[in-house]
Amino acid sequence: MFGRQGAPNAEDAGAGLVLRTTKPGDGINFPKKNDTVRVHYDAFLESGRKFDSSRERNQAFLFRLGMGQVIEGWDIAVARMSRGQVAEVTIPPCYAYGEAGYPPVVPPQATLIFQIELIDFTAL
Image 1 (cartoon, helix red, strand yellow):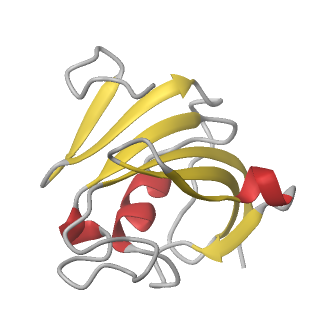
Image 2 (cartoon, rainbow, N blue to C red):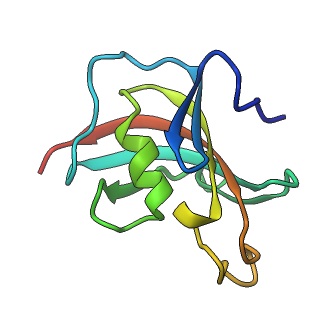
């Protein structure tokens, strides 16, 4: 189900955060800090258990990039994506929910895997 970190289309963003492109974006338009980004995502534990999905709710998720509105791993990964890109993002605990987790959904010290599609973004 999930790709390998060493796959040719994988980008290591440091500290175990890996972004693996599954569908390239336009390669030109990248969001910047404070832009409002619109994404679809599916969220998984390493076991493969899905714990959240904007797609299943049929509602894109919006947040301001780099403003701490999401886990740090999202801010890092989405800033590296271009409009239209779809990526599998592996986020280690230090960039996710850390030692505490997010009970009862995310256990402590959990590595999370997200399939993120950067639909669009707008500058404020």
